[in-house]
Image 1: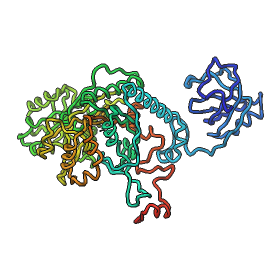
Image 2: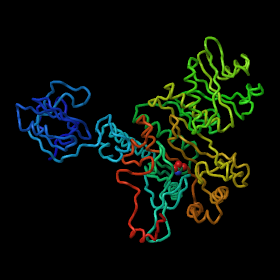
Image 3: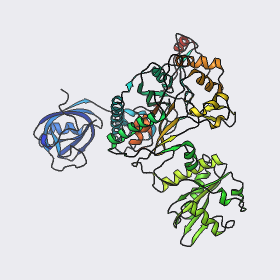
Image 4: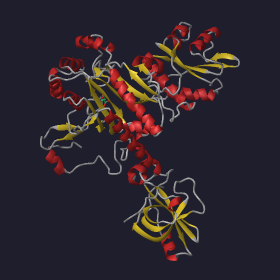
Length: 583
Ligand code: ASP
């Protein structure tokens, strides 16, 4: 037997027992007469103790152990003299009587401790070592628990977990496809699913009623901290439902996770906000509601007073930074620099401070004191506060102010990762128009139904920008955790949608004929949603980098630096596939 116990298991009542442990050498400390070794496995750390007087040879053997050696130790559990309150096994140690090296290890390229000295790339290259760190390991314990709770909850609600294929035809979710060449059908390609969207809809046609899957999805798009080319979704679909049923069911799932993972109760329903309201009040479709700083518009007060920046603007809009009236010039200049960064691209900020001396703005030349008072009222401003106003094209300015708002939230410590603020954003537009080409794109995906009252507009291709969808996102702390919609389940409507998106009827049939055919065999009304599992776990782990919650993630260039993928393939393999590589 390699071991009788794990390294996280032994406690004071075990004192006196003879046990065998196996694990990795975390650290060895040589104190002359005594040598202590911290032995680690997934479950914890146990101190091994060696005494020169008791057994010289064994003690010397222990001194030879290098970091990360794999060893087996037999010994007796004993109460420790100096206890370590920081670890659960800290009251005991093992008086070793027999020690065996099961495998040696090279000196690891970085320290395998909670706080590591390893840089990102190094940790990714030796990910199997990085995963030995307890802080990372805990992320996977969290992930596992959440997956179990998702399954428990959904099974109890009669959802059936069904696997859908990975070698498929394109399912557009707004990204590029990863494609896989077919050897048997040269010149033809499979696409990896951007989501199982069409399959889950076909499962509804099949009468499965409630489906879910914790499933890998693949999207070839630029990477960010919260995006990976392959990622995991909790993918769900329900038949005979309206938006309300779906929101209730998955609010239930979210509440179940909050309760079972964090012990948090959310008694009240999650707030809901329309897309329009979110854009107007927060400048984005995923507002972080951990703090206020709602936008207010000032066009009616500020225009026509001779201040050109405001006069020429389509929108003058701002936020109230509470308690910031005492900010120095240096601090406000830093805010201006922040919004002037190319990624944000604003031209500046107008500040209004309410100090003990009263209201004072950076544009006092143009505005009388009593005008500033009107502004202050609109923002519910109090003495000690500071308004930050921005002006320009409406949509852009809102986006810029959103960045500033979030930045202020960070600077003022208002975005506590342990405070969860969920929100449903609803009533998304069905379509968005590309400014340059004038083409219409599905805001969610092409299978989303228009709201019944707007359906005719879609068919007539009239006033398309105003067509709303029963589409919704679950947002927690400003992160889009998931989203979905009520689907089209009627061939004619699906064809109309594809036409609006610029597909010829032939093209639509070639790509999605199977789905539209299925709609003609008794497709029930249906809808669903999907949640980004990696993101949700990261959020519950109070972190923003989802890579910490994916065992073997890709780096920011989409590479797996450990196995070195993607990589070239043999000429022979290419020939088999009928593929010639250009460069
Ligand atoms: N397939 C969608 C997505 O991946 C989710 C859904 O509409 O159910 O975003």
